[in-house]
Image (cartoon, rainbow, N blue to C red):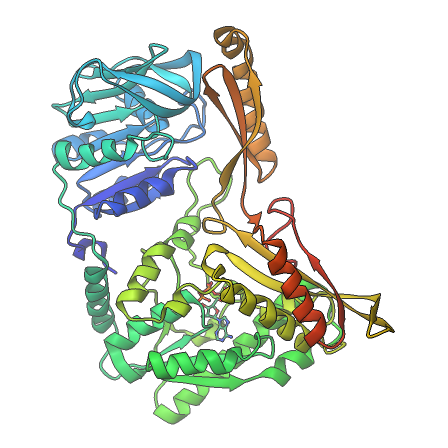
Length: 590
Ligand SMILES: Nc1ncnc2c1ncn2[C@@H]1O[C@H](COP(=O)(O)OP(=O)(O)OP(=O)(O)O)[C@@H](O)[C@H]1O
C-alpha cells in the first residue's frame, strides 16, 4: 500500500529503541490516524519523502551523554520548522530535542521510575482543558532530565519531585513529554495524545480499514498487468488467508493458491481448510498431497532444527513444481508471489539504533517454511505489510473471512513435526497425536473457552509408561497438553512479585530505588523476564512479566479430557499437563 494514498495525515514515529515505540503507533492508529514507525537515525530524505504532519521522537534506553547515543539526522529541526511539522519528543526523544536545540540535559538528582504525579504549570493544548494546578498520574522511566530548556521552550508541567514533565515551544511547534503517555499506567495518556494530535496539531483522521482495502486493491491492480498471474501459498492461517482473499478481490482467478498437505497437518485439517477456501472464500486453491514426499525425508530424524530445515526444503520443492506446472498450463510464468508479511515483521527487519542488531531491509520469506527458491524470480505482493495483526483480523472481517479462520490459534509452519518429539514416522505417532489434539481442542471449543486461550495443543512424547486398563497391564505412550494465554505471543502481562513495606518511604526511595532500577536493567537484558518497580502508598512493588502464561483449566474439564483421551485413543495411557510459562520454556516444545 502506498502510504501517500492514505486519507489521513501521517504521524511518523522515529524509533530510538523504546520498548513502547510500537505501542505509540498502535495508539495513534486507534484514533483513526495513520502512523508509521521508522528508525530514529533514518536519513532526512526518508522522513521528508513520507511528508508527515507530525513527528514523534520515541523514548529509548540511551542517555544523550553517551558517545554513541543515537540521534535524528542533521537538518531535521530546520526542515520541521520550515515545513510547519509538529514534533513531540517522548522521554529520550525529549532529551534529544532539548540537547540538539541548545538546552541542557543532565543526570537527574532523583531518578523517576514508575507512577508519578505531575502538575500542570501552564495551560497548554496538549493537556486539553486542564487548568493550572490540575494533577494527573503518569508513568515515568528516566534517569536523565531536562535541566535548562532551549530558548523559546516553556515548562507546562512538572513532576511531584520538581522535574520537568512537559514542555512546549508553541511558535516553533516543538513539544515534549518526559513520561510515557502511550502506556496504560498513564491513565490520561491516551487523552493527552488525542489532545495533542487533534487540538494542537489539527491532524486529519481518516485511517479506516475499508479505505485500506480499497486502496490496496487499487495498488494491486496497478502493479499486476492484465495478463499477469500470481501465486500464493496458503497455510490456512490468518495472514496468508486474508492476503490471498484481498488479492483475489483485485485480480480474480489470475490468483493461483496452493495448499500443501505435508502429512503434518492436524485432524481433518486438509478437508476443513479446503472446504472453507472453496465454499466460503471462493478461492481457487490447488491442494497438493505431498505426504509421502515429506514423511520419507523425515524418517529417522529426531533433531528439531534438522526437521525444520528438511520441511522448509520440501516446501520449496513443492512450490517450485507448482510454479512450473502453472507455467506449462498458462503458457506464461507467474510473475508475482503473495506473502502475508505484517508490519511487525517489517519493523523487526529494521531494528532501532542501539539494539546491537544490524539494519536489514529483507522481509521474511516464508520464515517458518524455509524461504522460497531464489531462481523463482517472483515479484512480491505484500498487501498487509503496513498492518498489525488485529488490523489484519479487522480487514479479514470486512472481506468476510469466516470468524473461525480469523480466531484460529497459531499453528507452526512445520506443523505436527514439532509436536511429535523424536521421529515423526515411528509408533503411529502422528495419528495418535491427531486424535489426542482433536479431543483436547474440541473439548475447549465445547467449553466455550477457545477464544480466551492464545494457543492450545497436544504433544506426543517418545516415551512409554506402565498403566492399567481393563485389569490389564499396559505399556503405552504419554502425551502432554499445553494451553497458554498471551496478548500476542510477544508482549507480556505484569504480575506483582513482592510488595515491600517502607517505614520511611522517602528515605527508602532515595536510598534503594536507584540500586533496584539498575537491577531492573540488568535483569531485563539477561532474560525474557522483565522487572519493573512501582511505588504505591507506603509500599514498593516489584512486578515481573512473562511472555506467556499457562491457561488455568477447571479441574472437571481436565478430568473429562483425560478420560476421553485414555478411553478413545489407542496406545495412550498417561496424560501430562504442561504448566510452564514462557520463559523459561517456549510455547511450542520444539
Ligand atoms: N501447509 C501449507 N501449505 C502452503 N503454504 C504454507 C503451508 N504452511 C505454511 N505455508 C506458507 O508459509 C507461510 C509461513 O507459515 P507460518 O505458519 O509461519 O505462517 P504465518 O506467517 O503465521 O502466516 P499464516 O497466518 O498465513 O499462517 C504462510 O503464510 C504460507 O504462505
